[in-house]
Image (cartoon, rainbow, N blue to C red; front, top):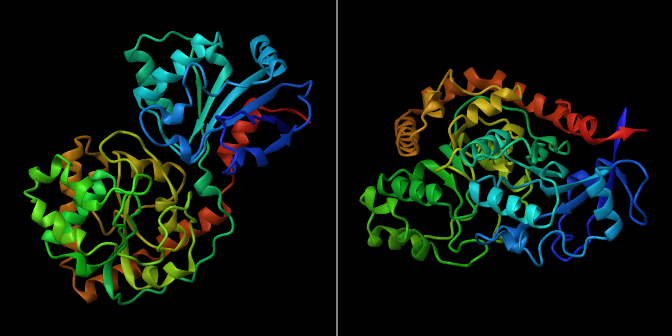
Length: 391
């Protein structure tokens, strides 16, 4: 049995406002560094999510290592400690951040093999391997690790699933104005399908306070779908669409809210618009696990192979009632159009077909709920075995 020895960074860049789940997974050394191998955890949080510079986390002069104690630095250089860049709730794994990290640690004479990047990307290792291959990076590489913290919430409870009639077909929660969410909202509006939905959507973008109109009007795909600025203004006048919250700023949002129970129980299926769509980043957040813990079927508006990733954890999806081949479409525009067509088709289902389908999927939603509540923390256990020391 192993345990993590953890030294928490308290330098200016490290985010000490939001909790880091890894700090509760080992022995935290606050006053002095341990003699045994340890992890020096630098937490990145919501304040690092803005702009291309990631909140100056990898600024050469004032980045994550600025203010690191000399004795910690010495242990890292000698190989008896590693740095953990911990961004446990985010999945920034594009070339931009990898280039910045490589440049930053090379400039500070830190071996890349001494750095662990812990994030929320289910295919982060694949994304990093692709980056390294395309940039001719040798064997000296950062370690990419993934722990699905959102899946480990054991405080969640929900009402039993009762098959039968539903008031509306769809349920969709939206907070940040990512392009695919804005586009989907506009298409549903133009197709007169919003009355089939319980849907939330803000009027201002979280973080920048930019209005929906100003943000959506600049999105290049709007013209491709014949969405005019008049269309955008029309939906902007209807915002915000509020279901459970009026404050869109808390980070992260909880997986369970008693205010949402009504909507899950009175709708048929969730439309889960994850953070990323026009990329290959598989980012599974509370948006994915909310329908699971609330015993609800779902369609994911996300990167290709997201459903495959969900199934890899043991969960079941809903190919008995939905054509889930959209998950395998690599072309983002084609995948988006396919999902929209599925939604349009399901909007035509009558009450009897929906009621019959609820009975058909009851075993699946119950199975998924039980798995989420009781599934072992395999990924965390593997992380501890890999980087921990014997008790």
